[in-house]
Length: 138
Image (cartoon, rainbow, N blue to C red; front, side, top):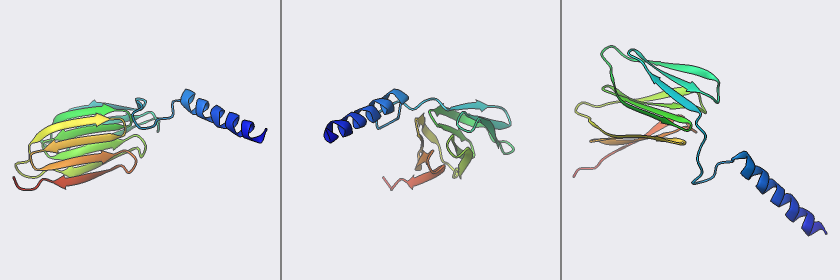
């Protein structure tokens, strides 16, 4: 009798998690961020924090490419690589280097990526920080 009760409880918990949309690997993350690119600023809306978070642009800085999805927003400018996390409700940045050219910008779920000719940038919404990897010589 005890085994049937444990199995039934386990099944109910699993069904409840499924119906609530608990994300596991491969599942779609709900859209929790919106990115608004303006001339002098970036505005990220976090549905998690229910607020707008502003990132001011530096003089002569211009946005080259931006994307947002799930809990993450990424913007690449001529001076910086910027990431926003809906979980931490904050922006994080890495400065671009001289002669660094953007190749790819992606945002999906909990991860943001920017690839340049010199480095790969990976942004985690859980930490709200960038991990940067310099490419080796060809």
